[in-house]
Structure formats: C-alpha cells, structure tokens
Image 1 (tube, rainbow over the protein chains, first blue to last red):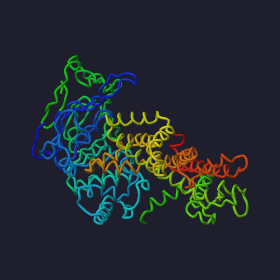
Image 2 (cartoon, each protein chain N blue to C red):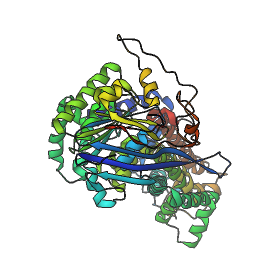
Image 3 (cartoon, rainbow over the protein chains, first blue to last red):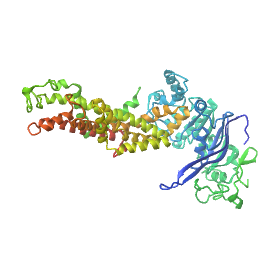
Length: 323
Length: 286
C-alpha cells in the first residue's frame, strides 16, 4: 500500500503464528496461522474498521499493532518510526501514544483498584503528575466520558457494563494518544448502550484527533464509524477500501457475501449470497486463496495460487484473481 | 463517599462469614486464645516459672484451676504463656512460608518457561520430603530455639502457597487489565505487584489461616519430642511432655494442653474454611 505522509500506523507483511500442542500425549507442535502476511495502514486522525469472522486474526492484528504481541515477522511503523523491535524505556515512551479499549468490560478493569487509579495509571507510570493532580485530572476525565465525580473513589464492580466501558475509554484517552485500538468495544453491550458508547468514541475522536483501529465483527458498527474498512478472512487481508465505496460496491467475493448477510429494514431486497460450509481451521488453512473452499466464484487457479493483495481500483485493494 | 467500595465489599464478606456458624465458633476459639496470649496475667496471677516444691502435682483447685505440674508450677499460667509461644510460632512460620510462596508463585507463573519449570520441579522435590523428618534433621544440626523452629517450619511450608499463587498468576496475566497496564507503559514489577498480587490474596489468606493450624501442630509435636521450645520456656508441647511422665496420677497435665492444641487447630481450620467460602465460593473444595 502507499505510505503517504498522513500515515500514522503502518503494518507491513505481519506474520503471527501461535504454537499449540497437537494432543495431550503428543510432542508434535501445530501452528495456528493467526495473522498470515497482512499489511495495513492507519491514517492519522481517521478510523480504520477491521472486520471479519471470529478467529480471523483481527484481534491479534490489533494487539500486534500495539506491540502487546510481538509479530513473528513483518514491520510495525508508528509515526514514521520502526517500532517492531523497540525495547525498554523507548518502547515505554512510545506506548503513551498508543492505547487500547477492550471488548470485555469485566476483565479489562482490575477489580482491586479504584477507578481513579485505573484511569490515572498512565500518568503515574510516566511521572506526569503527582497523586493529588492525578485525582483532579481523573475527575475531569470521568466527567468527560459521562460518569459522575464520585465514580473516582469507587471500585469497578460497582458499575454496569456500559459504565465500565466508559472507564476503559477514559483510561485509553488519559495519555492523549495518537492511536487507539478499539477491540470490539461495544460487542459486549446492549444495543441502546452500544449507540451511546459509539457516539462517545466519535465525539472524543473529534476532540482529541486520534486515529482508531476499530476491530469489530458487526458490519453496522463498522459502517457507522469507519473511514476505511479492512476485511480479514482466516489470517489474510481480503479487501481494504474507503468505507463509502466498500459498502455500496464491495469488490471481493467475501466482502460481497458478508454485506449480503446484513439485515436491512426497507430498501430493495438484495440477492443473498449464502456461503457453503464452515470456516476452515486456521491450523491447516487451505492452500491457494484462503477463501476458495467457500467462494462462489472459485476456479481451479484459486486452489493453487494465492492471489496477490493489489490495487484493483483507484484507492481500493483486494486479494482476488478475478477482481 | 471515599472508600465506599472496599467498605461494602468487606461488609459483605463479614456478613457471609457470620452466617457460617462453624466459622464463627472457630473464630471465637481463635479470638479466645489471642486474648489469653495477649494478657495471660488476667487469667492466672501465678508466675509460670515459679517453682513450689510444696505444691507438686496438685489436682485442679480454686488456687490452681488447672492444677500444678511436677515442679509445683501453675499449669494455667504456663498454658497462658505457652499460648503466646504457640501463636507466635504459628504466625511467624506461616508469614515466612507465605512470603516465599508468593514470590516463587508470582515469579514462576509470570515469567513461565525455564524458570517456571525449574522452580516447580524444586517444589515437587520439596514436597517429596516428609516435612516433619526434614525439620527433625535440620534441628538436629542447629541449636533448637523458638526462632530456628519458626524459620524451619516456614521454609518447609511454602510449596502449597507457591502452587496456588502460580495457578492464579497464570490466569491473571492473560486478563485484559494486565494488557491494559502494559499498554499504559507499566513495567513487569508494577504489573506483578500492583495488578496480579492483590488479586491472588484471597486464596492465599485462606491457605495461610489453615497453615497456622498446621504450624502450631508441628511446633507442639517438636516441643513434645524435646527438640522444640526448650524448658523452662513453656509451650503446649513441652507441658505435654512433662504430662506424659505423670499421666497415671496427674491427668490434668496432659489433658489441658492437649485440649488447647486440639481447640486451636480446630478453630483455625474452621475459620479458614469459613473465610474460603465467604471470600469466593469457587474455591470450595480446593
């Protein structure tokens, strides 16, 4: 992909395999191909929606982007700087610029810490404020994300899922990062709460000007927030397109089948593309194009040759032999 | 309201604990022996080491509610002061064991790999030794004193805690809040001690409470065998030793310290199990 000057995060040819034991008694190690040669750019201040079925590697890719997981190979460039093998103090300083919001609002907050300490941990770790200042800064931040002031002295178990997610958001923006990886931030919430949290995320983006790498399996959510959409399948990138174009004219057969599965109220009924079979195991992904076992357009070549990820229309990238 | 959360959590915990009658009974016994060891003078006006050859082996009476021993010393006074020794040994030994167990478990679980494998095999080896004979062997080389006893019991009793903490650490380190702390720029030490350690403390508290009972029992056994707390310092174990020589004509010398040991151990066990159930129902039967 083109690496313009406005690119904040650039992932190049990222590979990540996870070893798993074949069985309890065997010494043989199998490898889960979580992320298999993926490239993705996130422009500064924009939202890139990363969509795919569960197990396609989108969460892994999000964590790799923050170096919470180290890639097996590939390059992570942040703000023009290669951070793939940064260590120690330099990595710690870089972390201030990149934060994460988690899917599970229960596991993401330490149950033994007060909210003000959770939100203010970054300031403390980076020596940006003393305890009294942290308290005041935390109060302001909690108000900003829609919580009341007395939240600061409480423990996470006293809050609902949506409120906890607000605490998680406050923690993520405390250090004024340039990039926030939002890993399914609304999937665990009720639909009504989902909308509130999404609006909060978008308001905050306007205010702080950060970029989002927004991971979700929910196309409606992705459509609502994204400037660019990236579609993953079984560890590979299938299509990357500007959101408006992707949703009105999907190119890749996988994207087309995904979009046809989104329920719609009103409008003209579309033809449904129903995929055959199950998603193959990431331990033994099919050769050639990853999607050929379920693709309605598959030909012989798809079983043998892995299609290159290339620009197939201006500004639009796909990995398919026929697009 | 500042501290509302911790407050209500603690109140909840106490309420659940209070509903468990056995735990309350255990707690009452433990509390009684605490008071006994804190202010022994209140329970007996006698000096535990004052020898009175005119009152040798007297049965329980108004002046000596639990009788006197073979040197005419007041048994109640000796037991009250002995309680202090027994509880001190129990707490310090378990304190040492818990600290070692916590550090080994946290380190092993957090870093994994070779360090984990080596440490856990070492735990297996330690568990293979019959602890009591290990203690006997160590004390045979060293001069027996209350401090040596504490250290030796502590150093041979940390394996259970380390396994418990390691298991908790393994699951805690995969939780999102640890990833969040890492993303905030927190180092390993901060993650281990600020994020993981506080979340392992509930099961450790339970293990420690049960451990106190074990340590008191071990100390009594060692003192009974004559290699623990040395006379004339009173301890429940060495009062029993004196009792065994005179058991045919002075039952009170054996029965009361034996009962004290039994009740204390039972009390700590009931309290420990009560705390376990009140802290976290998941831990039941572990």
